[in-house]
Amino acid sequence: MSRSMIMAGAAVVALTAGVMQAAGAAEMEMAKGGGKAAAPSAADRKMIASAMQAAPKRVAAGATVVVMGGDGSMRTLREGTNGFTCMPDNPATPGPDPMCMDKAAWEWAGAWVGHKTPPVGKVGFMYMLAGGTDASNTDPYATKPEPGNHWVKTGAHVMVVGADPAFYDMYPKSADPDTSVPYVMWPGTPYQHLMVPIK
Image (cartoon, rainbow, N blue to C red; front, side):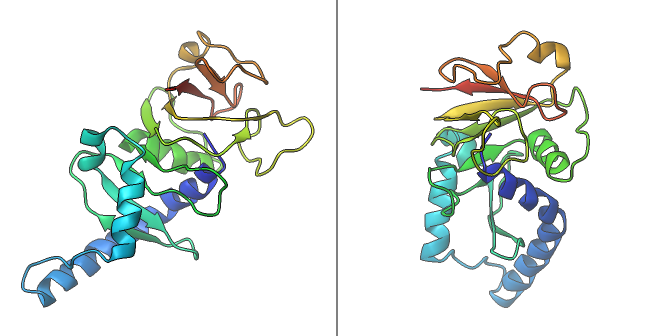
């Protein structure tokens, strides 16, 4: 998990309304264009390519791609078919951090941002194969390194969220973990999740 997930989570909250608006707008555009969706702009194609770096090729190819605007509103760049949603790299963060998540993980992220308890046992999966911006391993809402918040550096990884507590008990829960092996981030909170390094 990374600082970019804070923004991604905010995007989850906005997405519920945003998807409905985007769908309506897309229908209007198709009606204007005789049933054909407008071709993405060069900027949108670049963001789609960035988002697709988050997951394996076949997962990314069928995923919905969304981007959050500066005002927090969501925009769908490409509709998907496989239940995964990908977001491009956040240029405001120092490292590459595109991400791709399944429906359960998307809902988990929404609960996290809304300071609500995610449903236990509704397991979700996230990809961040291009890497991730660094984050606190103990504070789900930290936005910068501070004494005692156990900042960790992360690289390419996948995440398992929403599992039963007993699942996480099988993995290290150190505040200062060895990030080269699987470990639990935000242990002891409702948002604990398994971080699994890929490289």
